[in-house]
Length: 267
Image (cartoon, rainbow, N blue to C red):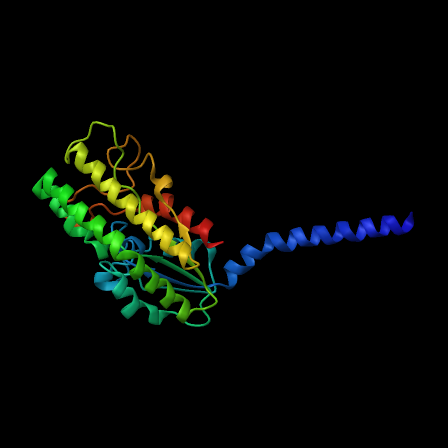
């Protein structure tokens, strides 16, 4: 009987310790992480203001999700080399050098510029519905035929430079809430733009999974905060005075949309 009680006590203590250490592991990992952020304007924080002087035309914001993660979690080391306009080729040629074998966490948002995001939205705004839909059809063909290999090269490049790192590919929000009365683009154009973004995210998710990379999907987080929605808008509408901000997350979009999704995916 005494032996049975002793065994039970040992198992109980062991279980308690396992729970305690298990609960502490994520925090401990975060505190010791060496984090590097890669990617394009959605990662640098274009549209969220408060750009750092050192980032120049890359427009890295202190309100961007990587900077918010750094401020909240306080990893042992942090560096963002995300840059407005970056393509997958730019990440490989100009950003991977920020990684090292000591890097333990990497985030990357990229792919939109590879399919001509800016020119598509310019066409949709200035040229009308038929040209908008044609431009998106062309982009969708590129997504299907070219983007998986380009993303795979990025993920393989990251793993080659930082083999021990947890890698998180962070996606893009869908721009429009459909089925509402909304001025500007036609309902067909808005629907087609959403279709293109969903294809981009789904393709990124598949490429990430095929290469052992976690995908952080922000689409559901932005629901209710999209353009043409009734809630607080987390995306800039077309802004003729500051074109670069158009269709990018606001500071609230970075903090309420991107940050919690990335924080959860980062572990």
